[in-house]
Image 1 (cartoon, one colour):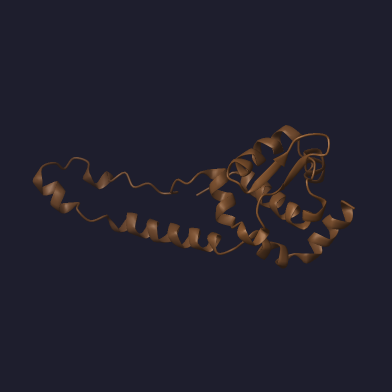
Image 2 (tube, rainbow, N blue to C red; image 1 turned 90 degrees about the vertical axis):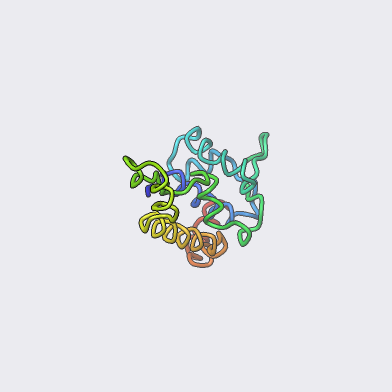
Length: 154
């Protein structure tokens, strides 16, 4: 599976906004400047996070972005799902059934094949791992980065 670059940008922005909670909202142009990105590009990456209730967007001259929930209430899976969608990475098309028809086919293929089962287990493990980690966990893992960001924005 390949995730889009927007997932990385989204997670980094959530981290930054977590470290800058007392300075929120953080203007889009400051986030874009920090990451050396065009504002419109970053805005498009953040909009799904706002729709998902992960970020809040405040309009106006003193507006910007902030976390809509506490960092310990935002999982990595929340961010990935908001940006990539809820679809499974592997979707079994039951190609083993091609060319087989009739009553025999229903009996032979009543149970999912081993490939579909293995892929499902792997995806479940991946999703559980991302759901078990929060933005707060990432913040705690990199306190020096938080200090640099906080210093830069003060």
